[in-house]
Each structure stands twice: as C-alpha cells, then as structure tokens.
Length: 304
Image 1 (spheres, rainbow, N blue to C red):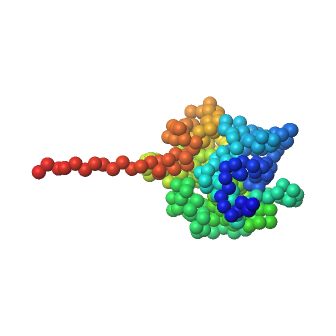
Image 2 (image 1 turned 180 degrees about the vertical axis):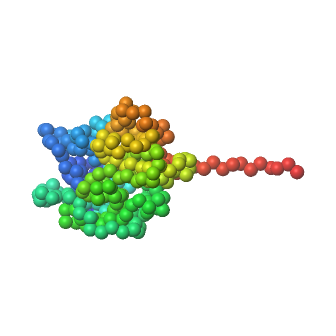
Image 3 (image 1 turned 120 degrees about the horizontal axis):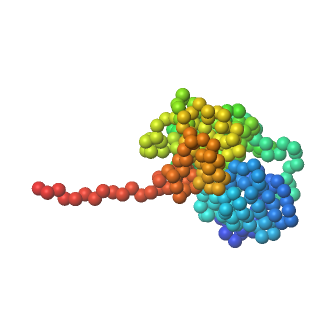
C-alpha cells in the first residue's frame, strides 16, 4: 500500500521504527545497550544523553522531561502539532521542509553526514515559513527584525528555514518539521546599554517575549539567548556588568535546575517563570493566551 495516497492511521504510524525516524530528523544514538538506544534529547538541549528508545517495544522516554510514549507522542511534542497534523506529515512528502524518511540500510557514511551548510540568506518570504511563524504566534514584524530566511544543504539535499544568528557566526534553524543549527554554535547577545538583561533558552521564547512585550508592560533591556542551556555557565562572566538578570527559562527539569543554580550564585538573578506558570515555556504561554476567547461586554439598556 502506498501510504502517501492518504493519511496514515495511528496504528500504521506506530509500526514505524522510531530509531530510523529520529535518524531521518538528523538524530543518531550516542550509545546502544541491548534494545536501548540512547540519544541527546531532540526535545531539549543537554550534554548528557537522557533520551532512550526501546527498539523492541518501539517506545521512548525522556528522563530530562519525565515524558515518554509512542512515535505519536514524540511527533506531537517535537513538531508542536496535533495528532492529525502529525499523521498527515508522516503521510505526505514535504520536499524541502523535512529530511525524508529513509531506510537505515541506505544511510550515508561520510564523516560530514548531517552537517549543515548555509547557502543563502534573505528576508523571510516563503509562505510556509510565514505560516509557521503564524502557527507559533510570532509577529511577522518581530521575526523580521531578528531572523532571516536561510537556505541550507544537509546530506546533499537542499532545505530552507527560519535562521536566528548567533554571535559566533552560526544559525539556529527552524521550520515546521526541522530543528537544528549550523556551525559554529553559540549564544546570541542583543545590547542597547541597559543595566538589566533578559535571558532566554531558545530564540522562539525570545520572539514570544518580544511579541508580548507591550501587552505585559515590560521595558526594554539587553537580551541573551543561550541557544543551548549548556552555554549558561560559560555566559556568567558576560553578566557581571548587569544589576539584574531576568531568567525566562523553560518550565522543565533542565530549565528549572539551571534557574536554581543561577539563584544560588547571585541575587542579581530573578526567576520570571511565574509569568508562564503551568506552561512549558513562553511560546506555549503565548499560544494559549492568543487562543483564549475574548469576553464581550454585555450592553445594558441605558435609562431614559
């Protein structure tokens, strides 16, 4: 049966090998112990592998997030989509947006496999990328200030995505179906001479903050986007000149562990996660806020 003729069923999707699927997304196991394949988590930044797939049972578990399940559960989290949309994604070839599913016997073996090479950058104009920003609740005008549309090459194929530049000359790259970065990887700093700085884990959290800034009544400050939690400790010396450092990190185990570490080091750090308490991160908070129905004020009859 040709699965591309219609949307896969949940049962059919669950038959797909998860190790091969993660490989198609550019994630390879760091170690294999029996049926357990260990990965650096595709769902958050980390230095020690905490994501495992039991290949025999074809299920995953992320110890950093405390979550797990089937390929369906993973796909919904990874692509930030719904179950029907993820099933459609698995069913339809999205050339140019996602690395296609491949048979593990056909994997390339070159030493530079998976490396991303930026071939062009421009103003964001592709309809699919503009739609992706809309899906993430990000103002197009805000995205255009800080991001580019980048064309890149990986494994001999050409793709495109939203590129967020870092200070080292590399890009964090996202589209609806892809999450990655080009070398060199590093932090992004945006300075305006402020005495305070706001710190974010990823650039979509930063873009969400900028989209919400006026509504929340937040004043301008300098900004640090880590692009990986692993860069936080290395960035501490760059924060010496600031009186206040506001932390807008993710509400997961890794993010809150980093927050607690920062609070123990200095009282200049302020945990701002109460703003989006009950949500995974700032972008999740933004999306829920935008979807909330607006209550219409009832009109009463005026006397006379």
